[in-house]
Amino acid sequence: MVATLEHRQRIARLTPLEDVTRRIAECVAPVIPCDIEAAAAAVGATLAHDIAARDPRPAVHLALIDGWAVHAELTAYAEAYTPALLTGLREIAVGEPLGTDGDAVAPLDAVTWRGGTGELPTALTSGDGVLPPGTDAGAGEALWLAGHRLRATDVAAMRALGIREARVRRPRIRIARAGQERDDIADAIVDWITCAVGADGGEPVPATAGAGVDALLAADGVDAVIVTGGTGAGARDGSVQALRRAGVVEAHGIAVSPGETAAFGMAASRPVLLIPGRLDAAVAVWLLIGRSLLARLCGSAGNAPFHQSVLTAKIASTVGLTELVLVHRTGDGVVPLASKYLPLATLAHADGWIVVPAASEGLAPGTVVAVRPLP
Image (tube, rainbow, N blue to C red; front, side, top):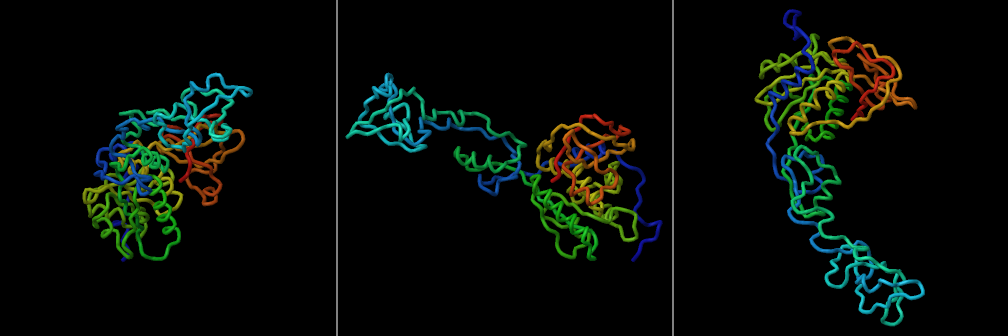
């Protein structure tokens, strides 16, 4: 059934982006943490507690190279023509404790054997080829802080240090689209957001096939819901009305460009982000709003990596709108590709994105900007 004009969704006013992010901070709490083994499954999760080394690592002197355990003082005067003559040397492998067999390690091929005597033509210093206690981590040393998102290298280091588990947050996010008709763009947006959520530390949860927006908002088992499409004033748009029936609409119409028809609210004590069904608008809304929401659920700062560059061409902007602009890297800096509407081809050519603040009428050539990568 097609809604008449007087019963359609309408945007009364655009809510500034800063007001929306403030409401997210007020309404959304970090999810309950859980314990997880320090294994591949932990990669991407956000730490809920600091992790510190209990004991020094290593606890004793270890061989840093394959070689021979040597007491360095016995090699003090060794030279090419008067090598140190060593007996009873123990071959030692990387990672083995030296014990009382020496305080240095001579490389395997540095020692020439004549009978049972080894000849070393180079003087060693105590500690050569040795990993001293506490080098990898000191007792009580803070290694990772709460809010840090675990990388594969972090998990590998944790396991090597004997840290078997961590207390983490990984929010479960249901991602779906409004409408059941075939729509390649809507499906592309869902797939893109699914990848973006996973890359930023969330656990994407697919929606039940054929479920309407009301059912998606009511279903349990997730910490937040993202629905794409149905945010405008079209005859079949009804996502915002469904959110209002299920809970509270905190903002419909957000002063970002592209993506003005986005909405944020709460349903069943869960945050809900409604994203426009246009791919460029969906990208902008996720980067400007969705990431902040997910970071809040993760209990992290949510600071995306960026590098500074110089704008090589002017950008005109509308005061009152926070605008996302795609840019392409050149030898002199970055050149803006598009704003307001982002043609799909510009997504292919973009090397990153920048933000024009709402209070600005635009940016002049030569402005230093923070360039962030696209997911």
